[in-house]
Image (cartoon, rainbow, N blue to C red):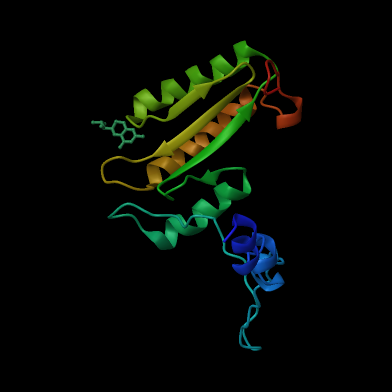
Length: 169
Ligand SMILES: C[C@H](O)[C@H](O)[C@H]1CNC2=NC(N)=NC(=O)C2=N1
C-alpha cells in the first residue's frame, strides 16, 4: 500500500474554522440596558451626597439645626462627616488674607477654640469643629459667624474677584 492511497482512504481533518458553527464564533452584541422597575407611587429620587449635621453630645439640636442652616445660606458647608463647617474666603491681596487669619487667630485665642486654616495666595479655607465633645457645637457656629464678620471687615470679595496665581487660577 502506497502512502498516497492511505491518504485518500483516511479523510484529513477539516480546517478549524469550518468546524465551529457561526453561533460559537459570533461576537456577542451589546447587552440591553437594565430595566428599573419602581412602584408607580414612588418617585425616582437621586441619592443625596449632602451630609447631615452631627451635633456634639450636650448640644441642643433644636437650636443648632436652624443656626447651621443659616450658616449654610451664608456659604458655609458641612464637612464630610457632618461634624464641622467649612468655608473659603477670598481676598484681593495676600496681605489681606493673612490679616484675616490673624483676626481669627486673635479671637480663637481668647475663646480657646481654634480653626484649621489654609492660607493661599488670595484665599483662606476655614474649618470649624469641636474635638471634645466630638461634633458640631455652638462654639463652632459662633466662631463661623465671627469669621463672616471679620471677612467683611477685611474686604473679602466673591470667589471670582479674588487674587489668583498658579495652575489652579
Ligand atoms: C483645652 C483647650 O481649651 C481645648 O483643647 C480646646 C482647644 N481648641 C479647640 N479648638 C477646636 N476647634 N475644638 C476643640 O475642641 C478645642 N479644644
